[in-house]
Amino acid sequence: GENVEQHPSTLSVQEGDSAVIKCTYSDSASNYFPWYKQELGKGPQLIIDIRSNVGEKKDQRIAVTLNKTAKHFSLHITETQPEDSAVYFCAASLYNNNDMRFGAGTRLTVKP
Amino acid sequence: DTEVTQTPKHLVMGMTNKKSLKCEQHMGHRAMYWYKQKAKKPPELMFVYSYEKLSINESVPSRFSPECPNSSLLNLHLHALQPEDSALYLCASSHTTGVVAPQHFGDGTRLSIL
Picture 1 (cartoon, chains in turn blue, purple):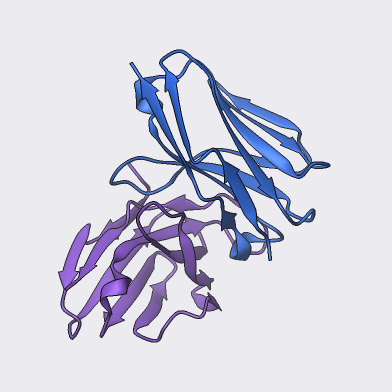
Picture 2: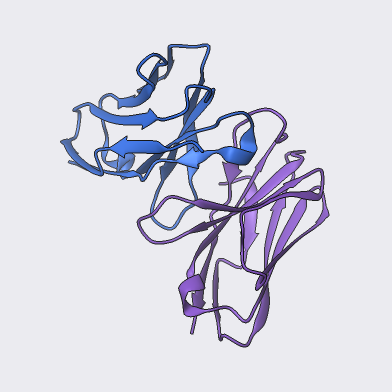
């Protein structure tokens, strides 16, 4: 089955700096890559996603890039704010929603 | 606020108790999921319902019994749980399971087994 690796496990940045979280996947047939943000006491919230036919997608301060050849995708957060502090999970789906696999998570801390 | 509502938010139960977790969505989604999340770990898929029929059971012990009474509701019946079953139980929904589509999560039920 699909295996998703996520790095780093923890990331600390100063407010206003950029943050980058990277994930790699094992199965080249994976075609959907969502990113979730999980705040303390909450469920995962979808913040951005990308499909395999697209190389980059941006939504305000958040962007995701996909390199199908290298089988990795990254989350970029610019102009970070303290409210961006949370655990971020990447995920990959092979064919359908029955097999979405999550990375181990990255705890992002944005220092004011 | 999440569009997937889970109740209760917290549940403490003994190993001999029977309780149920509830999940509700009104987005017209036809796929619903139960996940288990241990502290500092990603969610792990337990069950998938597609059009009110169980389509995936990820080798979950029989002390967890899912039920989908209609397209908006999903229950998880609990009986004779073990202390290691203490975790955050998350419900999610998506348009279908046939093609990849965003899954929307509730805020979960934090379950503690005494």
